[in-house]
Image 1 (cartoon, rainbow, N blue to C red):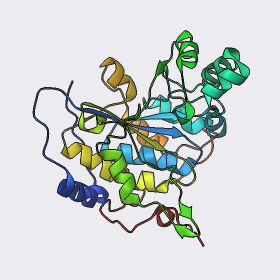
Image 2: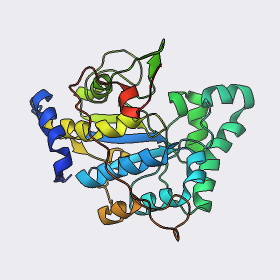
Image 3: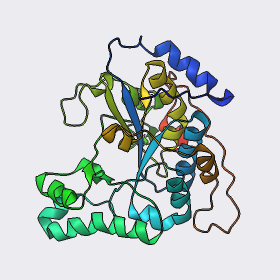
Length: 296
């Protein structure tokens, strides 16, 4: 697997320097360390664009798991992203708890959620890859069997941006962005199926969201990239991590995808700026500040 040279543009130099201060020395050994940066849901057009913009600026592969609702809402944007070679994988049509759905409505309903995503993407000419992530991480052997019947490979995560944590609590700003950064980059020992110890290992899958109140995630993305880069991780897409086949992202097309009109390729492009980076060492900065909201 070839190393990728990524050039951090001036906007990201500060984030790179900060990450260098906190990054531990690279691990020794022959195993290639890989990290896949992944983004779920897709309920916010601006944050989708900004995630791609950071990926383009740093030439860092990323993978999306949008819902069918997002494909319907932003079909031309997703088509441009997929046509550029950025993988788009299955997160169901409506984002239900598939484990509960199987119990209540049966296998056919679970299949409809997953197959419906595939059919919708095909009807919109959006290229997708045969991987899926269950909403909320909820799956069991029954759900897995349905997904396998459709040729889909399960993808969970090892780390998250913790960007679904409460923004406000009791009228005050609650979650801090430094916690999000460390959740995304550091080792955990919570003992649950998707957390334990893997960020210190050779295969890391980081989960973030591109939803209305996840500005902190795209603003921290440059620092997260710099941190893993400083620890000699290879950045890969989910398909590359699964198969070893190199990424095939066309960065020139990805740069155009950043400004693609959400619904109509014939309408004017949408000006999109890079997100303002957040200092990951600032322990007072909050999700509320990152999203420009008041908790009072």
